[in-house]
Length: 198
Image (cartoon, rainbow, N blue to C red):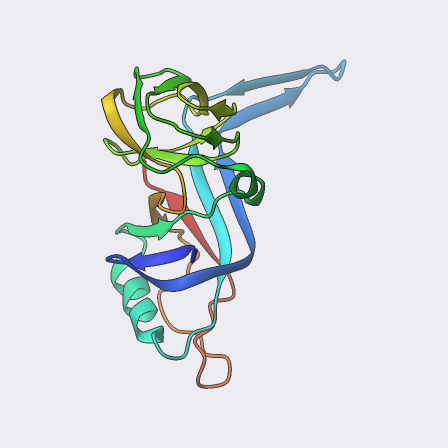
């Protein structure tokens, strides 16, 4: 599966390694004189991805237009990379249905027919927030997730959990809104950062 930046339903720029998927959760840390650590954190959380893009010759115009027109103000969609260990361990079929309450850290899957490993990135059809499973599930039943649900998930809501998890995000402020050519032919974006829209 090609993970990368979408234009409509087409991947116009594929991510290349190294890829970093980061959970950004603001926290304040202080050490007392006795070196006891005190930590306070906020409830907010977002996913951030830092990745290189495959150099492009043909098709570079699509990416160029996307980066310039979106800038840092408009969202872009990406197909979110899944953890390789989760990909290798999964056996569940696509098309699961779920239900969960706002603020909950558990959702109930009503039609999971195989194994969903912990570390699987998922999205519910009724909102854009991305979640990660923190428990393994064989068949239907309760699955632990992180972070807590921002919105309730009504009964029988479809779940995206394979290579069809689309994350809506912004180009980070340090991303160049233009072209960078490495030999006059290949458009080469060495690295870019995308942050989840909340």
